[in-house]
Image (cartoon, rainbow, N blue to C red; front, side, top):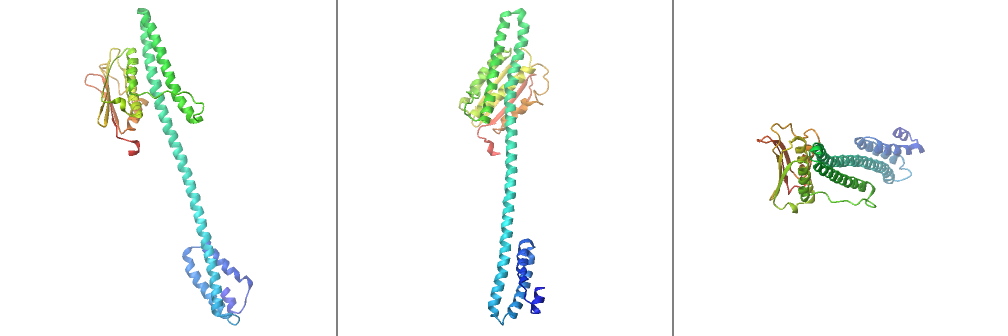
Length: 322
């Protein structure tokens, strides 16, 4: 229509709409349409420059008109690029927010798993000791009253120990939620130095425990020491659940170069039930702890009829190496 009216010599102020249309094409249209649209526009501007040659130079008119058309195209492309950038930033922000929520959920699930593992190790072991002591005390009440009194004292000591560990775990959770200000006084995590006391508790429950170490286990990292303690604790707990009263348990912790090996082997009854706590948190928890240090845990019956738990940790491994 623009070319037709200028061919007939008609000049309208509404012809500015041609530049608006060119701007809209650059902003909303397909980019591959711009070359031929620009070519058509240049032809139309040439016609206008020729018809206006009586009032102004053809080259001056053509320069003004083509500059105006180029400005319309450039403005449309600039706005289009800016909108695309803003849309990309919004999409990236939404993606980052989703990733942040996913990381938070993953961190929450990991923390829940860690707390569940700690609670299982603390409650499971101490309750097993208490139950074993209570059963023994019930039998000893009539035959040896002094033994029954001693058993009750051991039950009280074990209960207080379990309560202290639970308060420590819950105190850490409360501090993580509310901040360190005014938090409870916390005690250190158990380590290899506490395995002897752990074995003494199991001995008090009626089992014979022999504990041996080799290598410098006291120099181990605190996290490794906690892992060793929990694995030994869980293995002893399973032994108390399944073994007979006259069971003998051998606990061995050895450090050789960059490897740490743990073995908890009991004589057990002649017919041992299936893997201890295989479907629960026990063996799974031991494997999860060992995996933090590139280790493995295996459990199975021994030739003598007992049960053995073997764990191997890589002291050079870091969780970020995976």
